[in-house]
Length: 349
Figure 1: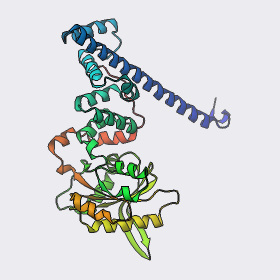
Figure 2: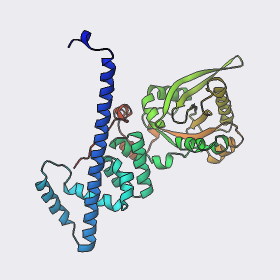
Figure 3: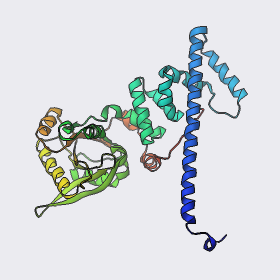
Figure 4: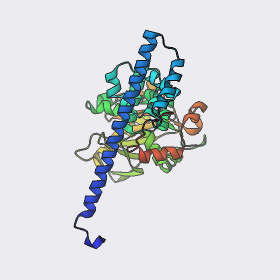
């Protein structure tokens, strides 16, 4: 049938149908992954029980892998290495309800990363939840663990508890990190704030990934007119989950007390000029190379606007062991494109 003979609204129908099929494919993939991970957990649990009650040795796993491969030659996942991961998985998560509710939702290859890199149960569950929420791949999950996101998240000095209503204050606090890792940048020691701003805008995709899900870039050197005078904001974002503007002021040196007064003015100006009646209060973030926590806390104590203070680490300032663990810029760009849709089915090796 030629395009001219197609019924009205055919294109809209086809677009809707494609969306429904893709949605069903994703749901099916998630269901398959969950069933497979639960199977792996149950195998690991049974091995643990028999090792405890019947004294099974580690060589039994090698024989078990051989027999399972012979019985199911078309199914990957029964290598000795993977079966040992199943045992470790069951040992790490003895509560089946926690496995069903959280761990089984994560692709198996990501679960292997969590088991390899983390010993603390609270951190395992936190990174698992973050990976599910943000659609991280295995590489990005490993990078977030290696960069110690668990301790960085929510680590900025803020006055949110006094300037924002609950639960907005708690959500905003968890939004900000300390420090921010700008591993994708390489700036000289004599670089100024403008150099840092240009570099971040040039690598905006990587910057957005480090900021976290929900940030939408509005502009750099964003103009605000107050009483006939023009003021420029280093960076302006809008956060889709918090439903508010976020002003970022960049500094290449130590935090100074007077920075908070300047940011207080910027936030007030954005609230006056840009904020919609349905928006939540604007948030300010001062990003410095270093800070005294005490000076930052004292500086924010008298501010009426919600402001945070955090530090940044540029690529050539990162420790060597962290540099080696970070994925490439190309990997991060691909991750930002595909995060929401990336589904990794369980792999056996």
